[in-house]
Image 1 (tube, each protein chain N blue to C red):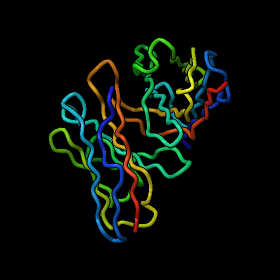
Image 2: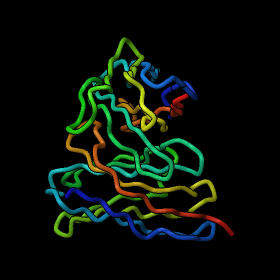
Image 3: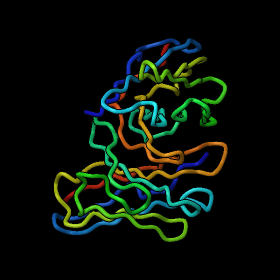
Amino acid sequence: QSALTQPASVSGSPGQSITISCTGTRSDVGGFNFVSWYQQHPGKAPKLMIFDVTYRPSGISSRFSGSKSGNTASLTIAGLQAEDEADYYCSSYRNSSSLGVFGTGTTVTVL
Amino acid sequence: QVQLLESGGGVVQPGTSLRLSCAASGFTFSNFGMHWVRQAPGKGLEWLSTIWYDGSKKFYADSVKGRFSVSRDNSENTMSLEMNSLRPDDTAMYYCARDPSLEWLPDVWGQGILVTVSS
């Protein structure tokens, strides 16, 4: 049950936009629109930022957006702010003996 | 407000058992599926188990299948994870999360509870 693949780290300056990729297979990311993204600050629980590929929960800034192409989903953070510095995880429904899978995680650094 | 609170963690020896609980409040528990997810120190998130809103279906990751068992009591608004034959690599922060869908949408998470397996 391998994890989805994310870059280990992404960085950007305040105000810039960054994109985090999340690569899976046709059995998960590519086969279903059940991709979600989580933000996790040190010592805190994960927080849902995007669900069903493109939707933002109530209260999440419009600076966060999601998309998908083939087996790769992406999270874009526009107008990067210091508070965006955190770990980000993608996750997806998986059509197999398991139900869900998380990505390897990406550390976002605001320069 | 919506809240999930894990309990039951601690330090245990390899080969022993432990039961985690997740207490829900602020929402209609019986309308939501529930997940257990763990995070080993300095590592990423790992999905462990899911139980449907009515308890009729349960799913497990290969890493815990046959050792861990999930259950829920909708009358008490609680979910449990019975963990047997614990190993040092089960050491992690364990989170419960709710899911409004029948597919995959863990939306609200608890604060987590630490389980340490060590001799």
